[in-house]
Amino acid sequence: MTFPVKIEAGALNAVAPYLKEQGYRQVAIAVDEMTYKVAGERLEREIERAGIQVGTTRIEPDRQGDVIADEASIVQLILALRQEAAEVAIAVGSGTLHDISRFAAYAVGIPFVSVPTAPSVDGFNSVGAPLILRGEKKTIGAIGPSAIFADLDILTQAPDAMVAAGFGDMLGKYTSLFDWTFGHLAGGEPFSREVYERTERALLACVEHSEEIGRRTPHGIETLTRALIESGFAMLQFGQSHSASGAEHHLSHYWEMELLRLGRKQVLHGAKVGIACAIISDLYRELASERPELFPVEHREALTEAIARIPSGEEIRRLLALAGGPTAPEALGIGQELLERSLREAHRIRPNRYTLLRTYNESN
Image 1 (cartoon, rainbow, N blue to C red):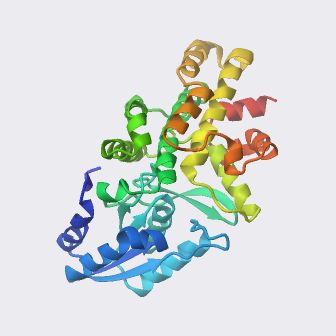
Image 2: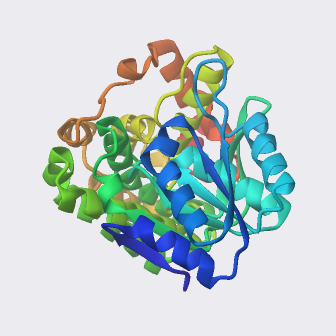
Image 3: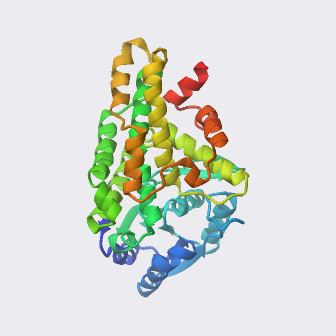
């Protein structure tokens, strides 16, 4: 993890000099309509002034008006990268544009640079690209960025809903870290105490500054941005996403696929994760008290204590509200039937992950 990472006001100004220093002659920018206005147009001008050829691709939205990381978006960008003979791709946007860019760059064999425009997800520096392929959510191995330029002047102006989503994505670490512990002790999954603690520190920094994040202060936004990127580095260090993605993410992915299947507009990833975290917290607390046989005898006490350290669903919902985010699945258009079905079936999305939700469902 020795590549350049700038998290500061004015970081966008450092992109063109970095590209010049690297000797790039032809670069490609991936944007959507909004992120082009927020940062892409300015970046385009600065790169051209540096004497570098630049092509900009606006990723087309689907029929519901959403830009999604599906086959159409990926092919659109791959074709643009090839036609422009781009030597590097620059993702200017939030999580979805990064997923499209990282996979497209990987597919054509060039690096990509991260320029986040909202502190909304922890996947800016991930190597995995969660993609929608034939309507199914699949995480495909790709590449991490060769540099990150997180401009706090831009990030502090991000829409409130995206800030709240980033906070929700971080709160999801409460249950993902538990599921990782459970998977290690009950299922023999690989584990790193260093990566666990690195992720936990990032999570607790957000919780400690939750009021500032809720007020959208510059320090609050910087804390959230640094935590999201640190969580991404933790995943890079471990080589897999166990530290940041457990049952709460599986529920989120399940809901996303169902909304796509029904032709409904998408909901921000972190908004789904935060609400799912509260639901999983309540379920796991209930299982710890009523289904002790789900926990291996030799690890039962340690796992029960770990569940007790997860804030209650009520407390997680309080924190979500403090950040200005939704707190109940109904607010996302997730009805009771879909919620109950996802609790029964979402673990199948990542069948290689040994979560307590999976153990619970397979024991019934």
